[in-house]
Length: 264
Ligand code: MN
Image (cartoon, rainbow, N blue to C red):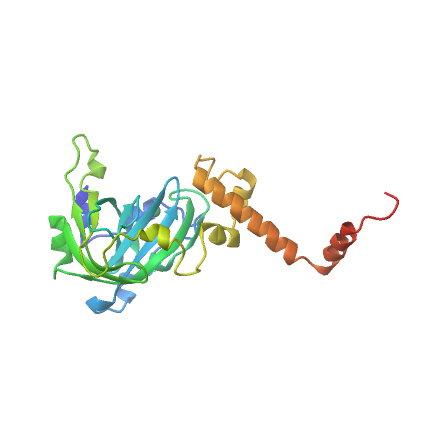
């Protein structure tokens, strides 16, 4: 029910936890109690966008609110062009600690590579965020590395026949016309991580899951061209790294190989 998305009470991270097996994913469990967080002034509310190469590439926009991260999955990513209306699917609230996460989800829900694509602070343009969410019209300002200025998330009407669990989840992300809007394609212009400064294959090369090496086809054999390319690039970066950081003994063997013995 849409109620669970909008509830201020109860356990807002239930859905987040239900979907994940924390023995198998490096994602934070959000165990830290919301009370342990020091209340922050509105101007220091955290926001991030995680570029997530899963079964499909998308950008997860997350806005800190009441100790958790309100979340929307934006398949095409944010656009700085005020004429664009990009679909944004409201997803389950994420734990606050998720906001800095970047890494590899080896299997299960969301399996793939997560890049911290942008981060910074956000400010709601209305006093009551819950009322704005209820109304389906949340205006806000972002101050990130890549995304700045005024934006709006507007809930759209559900298409007839939308399953109960999906109702109320369909929104549009729109840039307001301001100093920070324009025709620049920000996802192409600034594709890399604000945390590691690398691309997906760099993140993957740092922690390639053993089962991906075995399968070499990405996540549980899911056919995804982009992910397969990223896995292949990461594999060659790992191979290159192993060539250049080999122990002395094998180094000598390699040096010997370069000069084949005479008479062969
Ligand atoms: Mn995602």
